[in-house]
Image 1 (spheres, one colour):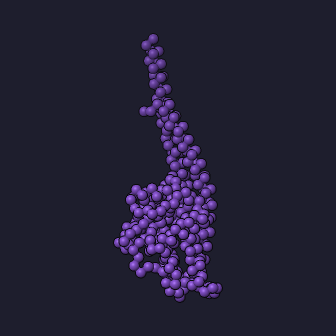
Image 2 (image 1 turned 90 degrees about the vertical axis):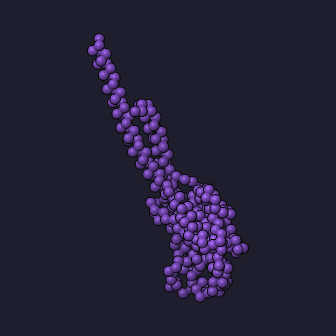
Image 3 (image 1 turned 120 degrees about the horizontal axis):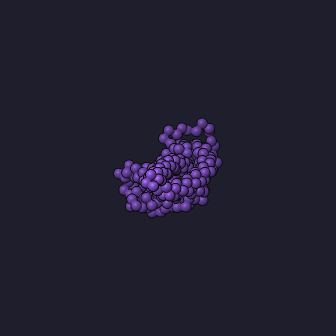
Length: 287
């Protein structure tokens, strides 16, 4: 059995850990509130954007714009995997990476080559260890901004237009609640692939000025940029939710461990006192 001093030292170290996990939980909760608000706002904006985009694209041939048109025989696929830079968020990052690898396995027979573009240090390190082709990576996007989305979207659009890829799929953690984050994949380029299969025609009749073809040529890059931003915002909210839940669980575990060690320390103290009393009594009888 460990000595009382050793147990006290362990309890002291665990209490320090408890303070850290509790503080990290509070920080993640504050960040989650902001990230969740941004993600939910992007959903409302995205729903309206899809409605207008669908109305503008209705009745048009896909070949009116290269960003709209699916390639007839796609050979090159880009999979953008969005993870966090930091850990301590449970299985969140590993679940996103597993989903990305599952997408690669499912599509590997359909394409001649697949490139993986990680956004986030955790995904970059894991995918490089898997020895996948990673032509570009982004890190340090803990708080996504429109500038980040513009940089990533510009790079992906350039790859698509120059023929370096024929399709772009985003894999990220979709935020449901602080307890639930769902790994999701969505086609971002060509833009028609981003529309849901059961998407209905808008109930509102829109009139476009200039004509829809000219309008699409102007706004399609912005539409793709927003899709990228939405994926980053959803993933950021998921990360903070997962970290808050993970730190809450860690805090509860430290409390249980402290209770167990305190009981063990009391037993050790009781054993020590009993032994000392026995020695005193034995010494008195000997005299």
